[in-house]
Image 1 (tube, rainbow, N blue to C red):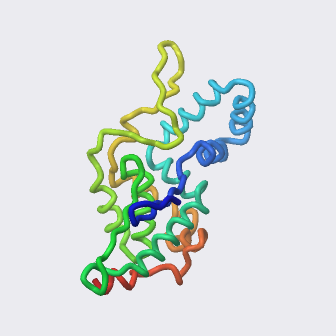
Image 2 (spheres, rainbow, N blue to C red):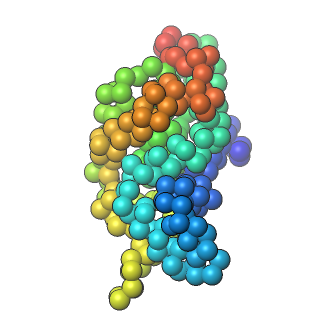
Length: 212
C-alpha cells in the first residue's frame, strides 16, 4: 500500500501472467497443459500463441473466471479490506468530513468490475442488480488486461494478439456467466464467498451505508 495527501492506496494484483497462465493450463486437457509447460521452456512463442488462443476463445467471461479461481487470496484480502473500510466509514455530515472509497484499475471495468460485483453480492445485492450495475460500463472501446501483453499481429503467423472485440465493453452476459460459474462450481455465490473467506460475518450491508 501507498500513503499520501491524507489518502491510502492499496494495490492488489489480479490479472498477472502468474495468475493467468497456470489457470489456462488447468483448463486445457492434460496433454495440452503439459505441452504448454514444455513450450514455455523451449518455444516461448508457441506457448504465447496457445495462451492467447485460449484467452481469445473465452473472452471477458473467461478472464473473470480465471481471476475468481487463480486470485482467490487477493480477492479475499481486497474484499475484507473494503468491507472493513465501509464498516468504519464516517458519512459526511455525521461527525466528520466524510471520505470516499474508490476502486480502480486502468479502465475501471474489468478488475474493478469483478471486485465491485463481489462486494455488492457480499452486501446482499441481487444478481440482477449486480448485472445491471456492471453493464453501466458498457460502451468503452478500450482494453487494459493487466499482464496480458497486446502484440501486433504478424502476417503469415498465428495470432499472438488479443481480439479487441472480445474484450471491449462490459456486457451483461459477461457478469451473467461469472455468476453462473460461482453457482455451478460452488453451489451459489455465497458458497464461493465462503470458499475465499468471506463468510456470514463479513456479509451484509455496511452499517455506515445503512445509516447514511
